[in-house]
Picture: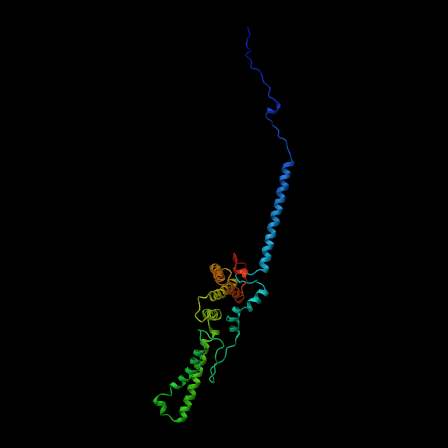
Length: 282
C-alpha cells in the first residue's frame, strides 16, 4: 500500500524564467540616437539660416511690395524717371514757390491751375471778365453826362481795379493754394489724360492702375510718418491687392499693354505677380 505524501513537491524554475531585479545598462544605442538628433538639429538650423539669408537678399535687391521698386536710391531714381512720376504735381515745388505781389498794372497768371481750369476758361476769367468788369460802370447815364477827362480817369481806375480783382482770382485758382483734395483732383485728372484715350476714360485699366499707384504712394508716405495709424494700414493692403488684381486682368486681356504699362508706372513685374505680402517695418 502506497501512502501519498501530504507535502507539496517543490519545483525549481529555470534561471531565464525568474524575474530580474537588475537591468543591464547599454550606452551604444542611446548615444547613436543622440548623434542623429544633433545632426538633424544642425541641418535644420542651417536650413533656417539659409532661408533667412535668402529672404534678406531678396528684400535688399528685390522690389518693395508697396512701392513696386527696390527701396534704394537706385529704385527711387527709377521711380522719378517713369511717366507717372513726371506728370504728378510736385508739392514741394509748390510750397517753395515765392508769393507774387498783387499788381494794378497787369494780371499775373498762375503757373498751375486747380479745379481743372484750361485754356478756354483761362481766357474767359483773365481776359474777357476783367474788361467787362472795367466797362460795367461806364454804361450808366451818369457816366455819359461826365466830361471826357473824367471819363478817362474813371476808365483807368476801373481797369486798375479789374487787375486787382483778376490777381485775387488768380491766387484763388492757383494750384499752390489748393488743399490735399485739390491736389488729388489734379493728379487724377492728369492720370486720366496721360493713360487714357480721352479726358473721360476713367474705366481703362491703365488709368485705374495709375490712380491706385498714386494713392498707394501717398498712403505709404503718410504711414511712414504716422506709424500708429493702424486703420490706414488695412486700407493700404487693400489698395495694393486691388492694383495687382487690375494689372493681372490687363495681362490676361492684352499682355503687350501690360508689359508697356509697368515701366510707365514705375513697377517691377515681380511686385505685382505671385503672392504679395505687405509688411510694415518702419
